[in-house]
Length: 150
Image (cartoon, rainbow, N blue to C red; front, top):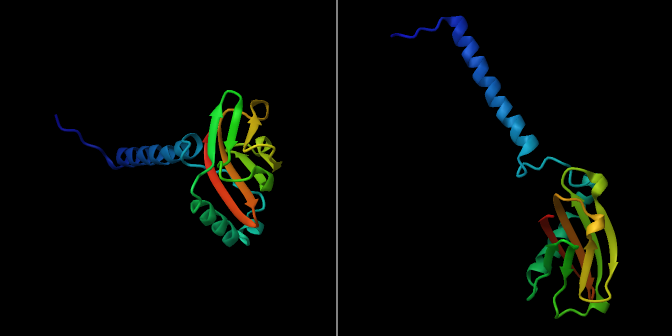
């Protein structure tokens, strides 16, 4: 049995395949978590002017002997600073950005009373966050950027 398509049917098949192709891109951008499309910051251009400072802080953090440890548990998110640091000397700024809704973002200045800091479960919503932690100790600045699934 031979199957023949006339030109009208061929156009309909091509159009149908095109709609499927475009639909797959729409699905990926809306529902697949690796395609983040939310704005990271409302003041993107203002922050872009200070990007070299951020690169320097990230480089300083990569040179540390001990890294900051981040633990997610049922009580919230715990951030543990290295034992080699004196917590009394640390001043930190925490920015926790929720992936899909800026109303759940958290921004705090942190003054430590120990080497660990906890963000309470009451302040958090289940989902993916981008953690941006900037800390200063002995006039040296450091930064940690981390994606966290809570």
